Image 1 (cartoon, rainbow, N blue to C red):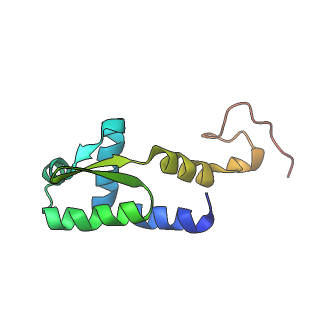
Image 2 (image 1 turned 90 degrees about the vertical axis):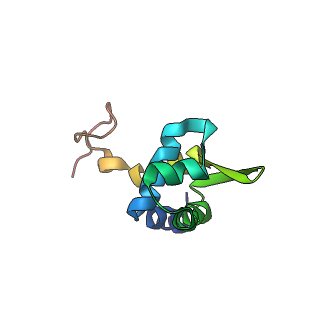
Length: 109
């Protein structure tokens, strides 16, 4: 993932409603959720949710599929994994600090 894409993704996730919507979509897995269901679960007006989902779409974190008059949204797991990989690239500079990949050898300072 390029830095500009990571910035766009992090900016999109930097709002409580967008983060909550994204987490709902991650929980839903590949089946995704209908926009109306997301609005109900988050207790936000459909127009407000539409604005927030558009931001997640533009950041590449979600995908949408028209199903008749409704829209189904799904988390883009590839983009999510790419963001996590970007954030953890060279984690802890090779030290065996808590939270780092087990088995990584320590590097001298």
